[in-house]
Image 1 (cartoon, rainbow, N blue to C red):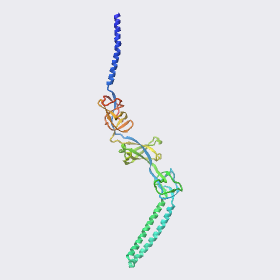
Image 2 (image 1 turned 30 degrees about the vertical axis):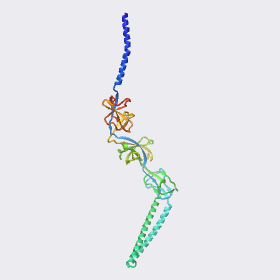
Image 3 (image 1 turned 180 degrees about the horizontal axis):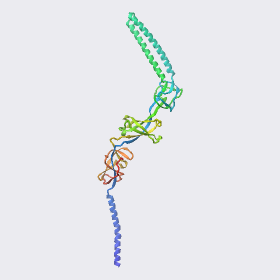
Amino acid sequence: MAPVLIVLLLAALVVAGALPRLARSKSREAERQLVTAVPTVYTETVLRDTSATPVELPGTVTGVHEANIFARSNGFVRALRVDIGSVVRAGDTLAVLDMPEVREQSLQAAAVLEQAEANAALARATLARWTQMAAQGVVTPQELEERTAAAHVTEANVRAARANVANLREVLRFGALVAPFHGIVTARSIDIGALVVAGAAAGARPLLSLSQTDTVRVMLQVPQSAAARVRPGMRAAITVRELGDSAFQGTVIRTAGAMDPLTRTLLTEVQVANGARRLLPGMFANVKLQVPNPQGIVRLPAIALIVRGDGPQVAQVEGDSVHLVPVVLGRDLGTTLEIVKGVAPGAAVVVNPPENLVEGMRVKAVARGRAAGK
């Protein structure tokens, strides 16, 4: 009996010593397999996207027509028939000026015209008599030519006097300031009895400002990346935060046709119907354009971008290996990025790349099942 117990005890001791060594061996094998295992990465296929690209830009609302009203002659405000916010139609009288100096000059010009006409009548009669005497040989041809020239001078004086009278009458007519188009008075700097000065010299304030707002235009600066694809006739959606989420529909009417060399942007005009006059000149607005992409652009998921010390890269899978490819970025489109240079359509790129991903690393690629940029 005793030898059996001794054998059993020795076997138990051998098993107790072998189990820890076996566990350590299995652990080292698992670690070795973990180190040498090929990591699994998820990829997406890069495609060329030819759908229209939404471009949202800030803009400024202005009246489709805007004008500052100045006086054509010095005078005093005799009557003021509008105020800020007044709705006027083309030809409506905005204000009436009293111009006493011009009125007196007009009377003087009329008297000068009468004098010139009397002198001309006398010169014509004198010329007729001298013509008869020249036919009879009483006066020399030179004297007749002198009388003829004098008559011509008096006729020219009449024409000059008439032109002066017409000019002063025209200036008097400008004493009534009229609206050049339908619109709203947006500013007033005069009152009844105020002295006004002619012209729009530097620093002079306009008497009134007028803006046509039943149709407004939104002016925006389109960046160079989209400028070549913006064309008249394109539809645009205009929103103003203070007016709610509803969008006003507008149309691109014209572009400047040249880039601003300082900002590298293209001045573009969008016109919007504004019958309810909700859009006010001077407002800040957001303009959304659907810019076509006939040539297409290469888009990449933003989560595929690797940013390290040597610039932006993507991990492109070729066969069972990874190649880190430098890329040139275009626009940031939110969840996707525009790639100007680096990867071509059809390439498989790693999304959510791990930190230890290096050039030439062997991987097991698994497609995520959706295309990049979609």
